[in-house]
Image (tube, rainbow, N blue to C red; front, side, top):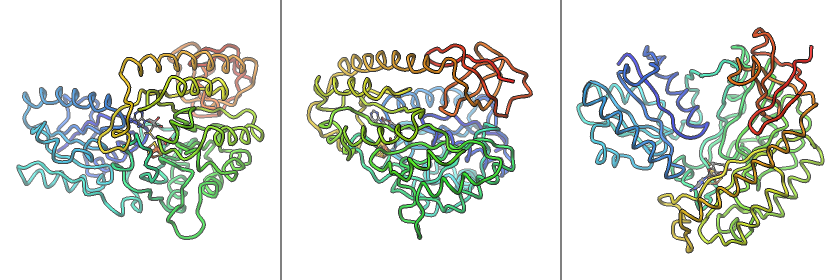
Amino acid sequence: MKSFHIITFGCQMNEHDSERMTGILEEQGCTSSSVAENADMVILNTCSIREKAEQKFYSELGRLKKIKDERPGLKIAVAGCIAQQEGANILSRAPYVDIVFGPSDISRLPSMIERKRSWSLPVVDVAGDPDYHRKRIPTTRTDRLKAWVSIMYGCDNYCTYCVVPYLRGRERSRLPLEIVSEVRELAGKGYKEVTLLGQNVNSYGKGLEGDANFPSLLRMVDDVPAIERIRFVTSHPRDLSDGLISALRDLPKVCEFLHLPVQSGSNDVLKAMNRRYTREDYLGKIMRLREVLPSVTLTTDIIVGFPGEQERDFAMTMDFLEEVQYDGIFAFKYSKRPGTAALRHDGHLTDDIKEKRLAQVLDLQRKITSRNNEKLVDSLQEVLVDGLSKKGGTLSGRTRGNKAVNFNAPAALIGSLAMVRIIAAGMNSLTGHLCE
Ligand code: SAM
Ligand code: SF4
């Protein structure tokens, strides 16, 4: 096998897993091909967080089958969460698939390919490597400036709607020194920003010897020279500690940005979701955070139409959005997932109701986001310039609050920090003036 092409579905973790698969395969002498049509092997790195992501995968698989019908030598591999969920069952639906492997089996990819070469039967490996979190895996990143760094895998929270704990396993943290050494290496290669990845970064360190925790990890990463910015996703509100709030305030490289998924503004729904915090707990934490960091950018995730969600529960979510005034949200219709507890809850809602509630939430948030962005007009923002602009202005970049900014400046600034005065604001981006 000389060339491969990876198609990635889903979240940043999957994007990063694909960077690892690329690193592993390139180390074996293979090259990445930009299109499936020219590749010897296509890997579909799948997501099963919602039904829609699964449907997208199966339609892509159908398209690949047509290519394979014309070119039977093509190898098709299925990776990620659907691979973990379905295992060998994928083969009964798609017998033309050659390799199926789970998210913690990535490092065995070369041996799976070798097995497939010497064996006509499909290879299925979803056993999970118990030492995966202790391994340093070769990684070819797509960006030259910003890098994702996994700090932990899995999740122990068992929110009743979510498949992640079943598919990504129990929470396992990487060693702090391993993480810091990876960040140092990235700094040496010219990276300016790292985003620390985990399903619940606030509980980082659980199970490790000593007193490793997330704020102390942030301090260690903050000390790495040449890294200019540190971000992280995702924080679970229950585990958002005063220590993390202080780290956000005190550590110069940690951006004043927090993605803190609330999911619902109704205590009854939060309880049914097993989120283990109340609306009041969450608001109390946000108040403390805003007291010490008034300029913090806040975003969240919302699920509408959770089983049993009444009109009054939904009204509480709308009211919550008004109260918090988030800078942005990701909103989803509740999606039934196999094996999760919420499947067995009473009161599943029709798609029409979910669709209507989703539209209402998004409509309200559009207004809030626009208002918040307008408040930034005339402010001075530190922007990490990441490339040529696709919209107005010649260059684009991100503020510390992760808002996109377009402005006119020489291309030589790409890769550096610039001070930009904001002169106009839209819902999705800001326009600015470079301050000399
Ligand atoms: N670990 C993160 C947390 O708890 O905040 C988020 C992980 S999940 C990949 C991202 C988002 O997908 C969740 O915050 C939730 O809003 C959404 N999600 C997860 N399962 C879902 C489901 N069954 N239906 C709709 N949305 C879902
Ligand atoms: Fe899923 Fe909840 Fe874990 Fe997030 S915290 S990954 S929503 S189980």
